[in-house]
Amino acid sequence: QVQLVESGGGLVQAGGSLRLSCAASGRLFSFNVMGWYRQAPGKQRELVAVISSGGTTNYADSVKGRFTISRDNAKNTLNLQMNTLKPEDTGVYYCHYDTGRPASSSWGQGTQVTVSS
Image (cartoon, rainbow, N blue to C red; front, side, top):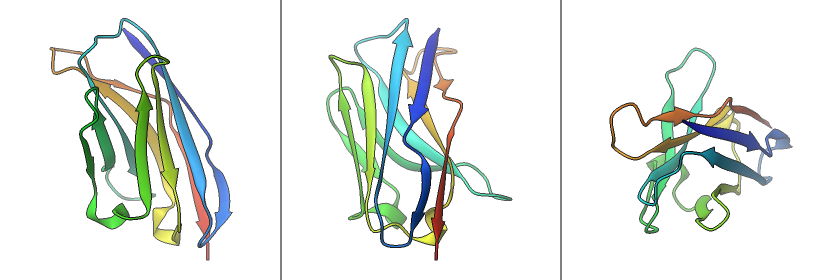
C-alpha cells in the first residue's frame, strides 16, 4: 500500500500563488505516475496535472501556463506550483499515485485551496 500526505493548501487572493506538496511512502514502484486532481463543491473530481517517473507531464487546459508540476524521485515527493490563481481554482486538491498494476491507485486525504476574488 501507498500512503500520500498533502500539504500547502490555504487561502489566497486572486492573482496570488501557492505551492502544494505530497509525500509518498509505503510500497513504491520505480515506474509510476503521480498527479494532482481537484474537486470543487458540487462538481466532479478533475485532473489538474500529472507527471510520470520519467518526467513526462500533462496539464489540464485550464491551468496550462499557470501551474507547474514537479517531482523528486529520490525523496518520493510531488509538488504543484500554482501561480496567477483564479477563484475557479478553488477546491480540494488531491494527490494521486498509480503504477497501472491492479489495485495500485492511491489517493491522499486532500488539501483545501481557496482563492478569493
